[in-house]
Image 1 (cartoon, protein in one colour):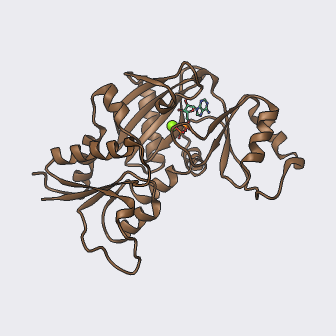
Image 2 (cartoon, protein in one colour):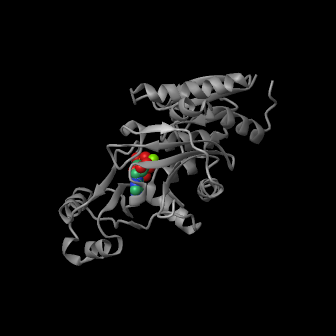
Length: 292
Ligand SMILES: Nc1ncnc2c1ncn2[C@@H]1O[C@H](COP(=O)(O)OP(=O)(O)O)[C@@H](O)[C@H]1O
Ligand SMILES: [Mg+2]
């Protein structure tokens, strides 16, 4: 019998992380795989020793990139690949890669590194950013999920307060796509194919994240939306991707971000599709496992 480890973060106490792992376990077991849930801290990353037990593959649902790399070094196939998890975990890095691949996205400027004890307020740098992107604009920290580190900046005061606050932190400035205020689309791509999608909408916030109060409904994607979501996943070599799409001026899709470890519960509730099924089928076909 094939075995897999489903690695998730054990320090996060919110039920949704365990729930996510259970959805994958269910999908693996349906395919006759013995699936073991593993909290990241349950594996001792002793770099001098090899693991005493090893699975046939790992579904990595955490952002503990060092652990993902450690497991890959042990010769275990890890999905997503650690390099994909790493690039997706940093929005500044992923926007660089998306832009390089000509993926349609909002205008984005990566903030320069400013050490916390210093300031570039008097250099004219920020005036240039204001001139290019105008207000309102989005400021987004490189690391963040569930809408928590994405800010809508409406005034110059808010702008300067935020840039001072974010010294020492990686972040980007981004054009605010006003035609997408409070709405977006989540598209789950597996192995270059769209497997599920949902429309997310919030009546109270510019962010459509469900964790932030948004509600989700079914949607049928246009060919263009599908194409852009697949293009975004491919630009980051993401075998699994949760792509957020915004609605541009003419409803054209613009990539908001790509999640390398996308949560799949909400989309399951909305569409009845367990994206985990497609993930496990994809892995099995890739590693050439015999399905019992
Ligand atoms: N440039 C933008 N213009 C308009 N809305 C945006 C923009 N960027 C993000 N949003 C809104 O904020 C939400 C969270 O942003 P996102 O980049 O997906 O970060 P997170 O990783 O926190 O989900 C998006 O789902 C979208 O509703
Ligand atoms: Mg998002």
